[in-house]
Length: 218
Length: 79
Image (cartoon, rainbow over all chains, first blue to last red):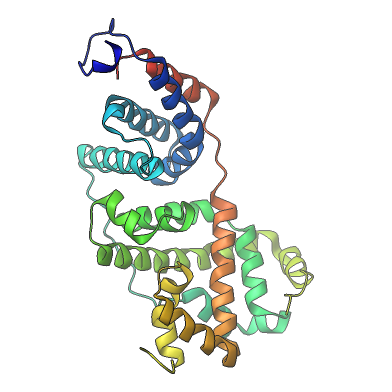
């Protein structure tokens, strides 16, 4: 009888033990990465917890329609992103479309190349990377406006393919690419500001550290 | 078939290439370009390492234990 249960709202219905175990395995496997993404999306621990809870509640409700063997991670992320988009629609906040004037695709590399200061200190790219290492990269990422931030999180942190992201966000692949590339342009521009700030905070020490960083192989 | 790529064509395809989303033919052409154009090879290497730094700094969050316990108890409800 247990297997025939699809009814909702009856707390006395027996849930097959096998389903519980499969679901718990899903929670254990994906919770940390979903929570991490939720945190970067919502920028707030309480909101991230709510979002993840909502995600798994919805996942559990439709668990029977989920076919074992399909991409569980993408399925969970699709639920998460739908819940996230719903929640910012509900709070009537429009997606933050404020856009910096467009900078080139590879802002940081160009900045490193043209920096006289970095050139004097040695390998400009190496110095910039070590400054970014010292910078608050999370804060920079969290400032990338939506809908671009979501694309960057899914591609660069979670390493979903363009096709998977298209499926998760229910948008065409071309839109995935344009959001992602635009998100990266934002992020690079923000990282440049954060890296400069990190340099000022640490004063001379940061420069000294960067200069004494191990030389790049090859 | 792209054949001989120049630096500008490379830049247009660099992100797709680094994302593992470029066609095999394009990958071959880009690698050939890297082999003879050191600045482009260094640029690609910079973007690759930048992504590693971003991942290193932004990943690795652990969900609170209280949340984990709550979620495991979701299965007390009917699915």
